[in-house]
Length: 121
Image 1: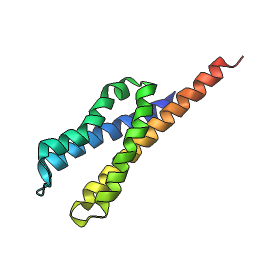
Image 2: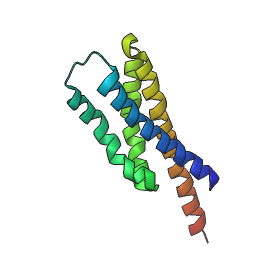
Image 3: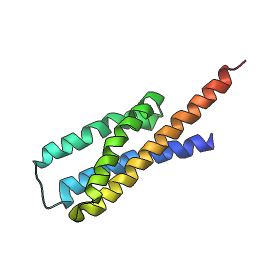
Image 4: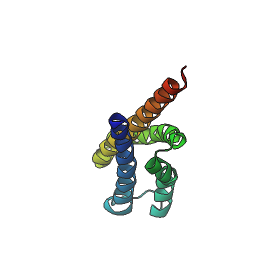
């Protein structure tokens, strides 16, 4: 039970960290914008905001969605990490998306293992 709490906490931390990072970096810190700020924030925040309620309540279906949604953010993190002006943003996005991925993956794995053990005769 404590292990499940640890993984869910990692998942919540990764999700909320990604949301805060996107808002702070794209909404406030970055001086160079190649597209309107509102559009960039909408594109990057919409998938994350979709996950908030389910992840906070510990829903397994939302954790599966979080596993899939975290992968493009990891790709974006690598993309930004190789660009010198936004290297810090890339590393932070990569770390937070990996935290979301690992936390969600291990939560689903532990709950699935528990369900199999309970259903066994």
